[in-house]
Length: 176
Image (tube, rainbow, N blue to C red):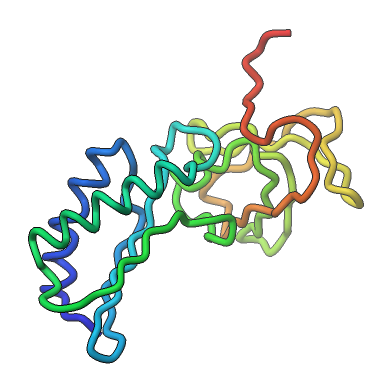
């Protein structure tokens, strides 16, 4: 396991590169793997963005982070760099995670123990706005949204959708 001092040195090099690319440093981990270290960097789009980080941007940021680490040498020795996004398996634990998940199908476990599934339309004023879905198929249906205070949510998860008509990255702009 790398020391906290090593992790802090790596963060001091990596964070400005990520922020300078207009992205968010979601997580950074430095571990030992035999004689090598492994530097795991998890990046994401800004919370106001809808959609996913594209592979070209991920590759470019990975190249920049690698060059900065090589120049500063905060790891001291050989290391493997892994740069990725949180992916859909990331638990939704912070308000910004829910904001990033707008337009996605989410499954929430409430503090009462109840489970709610819906299309996350918006996050505002400390509450989640969920559009209704058909329970059996999880397809979007017409109906009034449900508003759930963020404080009532014990855990949240994005549901993977293998087939969905329309773009998962389009927010309703109110036109039309």
